[in-house]
Image (cartoon, rainbow, N blue to C red; front, top):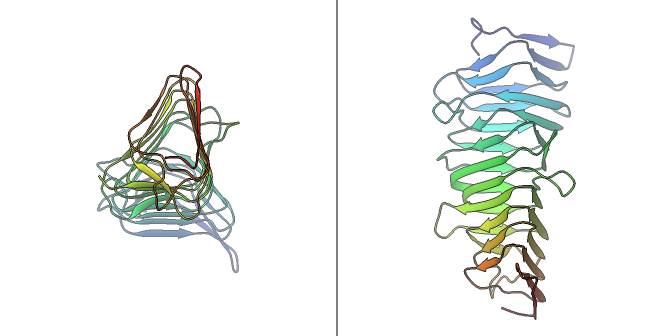
Length: 278
């Protein structure tokens, strides 16, 4: 840590430590900040050079971090633990990003692991502190693994996920659009529980989607837009009930395989139900 330019101090007790950084923080090498009584970074944290790895562990305490840096000056591998994280600024890594606690975003946010092969994981829900900020998640060559993004009561703005392949562990809710875009020709979207994706302006799934184990329900609903999908389920891994609702139309570029009911509602309000259908 550069001590000559940035002020910081440690508060120590006999067996516990709270780390407090009162000014902007620049790291120039791989850095681990661990505070069993919390970590307080009052200003931004920036990679100084050589894409340093960063680990933040606030134990059972909340953590607020203002990330600086950009795609031309990223961190290395980033790992964050705590009871919850308030994320301010955009986060860039050239390797991998793993965020264990629930995340609150305060403005339009980019979480980007660039061309790294380590993957990007948001293992707990992402919500907004207020309003409907947009979220962009990007991992060109690796897995994007996310829990729920927004909620029906408090949706995010536009949601964009780009990766080689995907795991969805929860629902997605947006007042704008939801776009899940592949970087690899064979990349798939895998769901490991029933999933509902709600968006006002449209939903675009550029990859095939399959369940991880048993058939799960899938609901895609665009209240003021189009739903566009590739194949949903297959003969080996079918979905259960599938509902596609697009007020401006539904586009299917593949096959849909279910074990129970497929419902499609397009801009004319027509409904098609197929039992054990393809």
